[in-house]
Image (cartoon, rainbow, N blue to C red; front, side, top):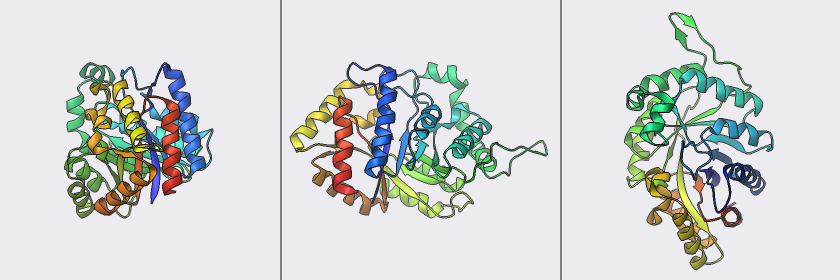
Length: 307
């Protein structure tokens, strides 16, 4: 079983955004030392308690301070951006950190309606164009893109391409990943959907690509570990109290029934059940407590039990 980190880059306690970003770098470095496979940063806009509107910038900073751990977006919100710019950005990251970059894609707005308009205009129209946008992105990442009959290349061309993943919570996102020939991450921590069914759809409809020849799947889960179950639930309550529902995707991280909360042994048992149920060997772990120390400690306890 592999474990990876999904970081919402929260602003906790009395910290400011600068501190939150430094804590993100510390979490990534510690995760590398503990044996976590990936560190992914999420994208959100104009939310006071989430500090990362541009994962690609944070990943470049962390990439210069780490050596092995894979780095990615979880997720870059593609409807806001042109495929060319995304391909250039992640190829540049892949050239700076060879063999370590993941491009995780989402289609959520990541903020309020007004923020979406400020970012990219008509967001719903951009979402409607997602199939064409994804196709263009795949062509750019495999040097097949042409415009008005002319070849267009997203440079620089890295030693190895970024891995491409689609993140989602339903059949539509799974279908996008299947058609694109990308990996798929089921967002268990922010979904009430049947993950088994969604992942089955992805695997059955998967179309191989040069980027991803076979279906690859992960599940993103909310986990809080502590030495005792009572303490773990207390930390979970503190995390919930810190965030307003609108500041979390679909209030997902606050869905206690969706989270694994308890001692390392209890959490490991829960992960093994999800592994068998979803047929995945890797989990992206998001942990929200009320302070950075307990958050980092939770990741350490989880690693000691599972890695």
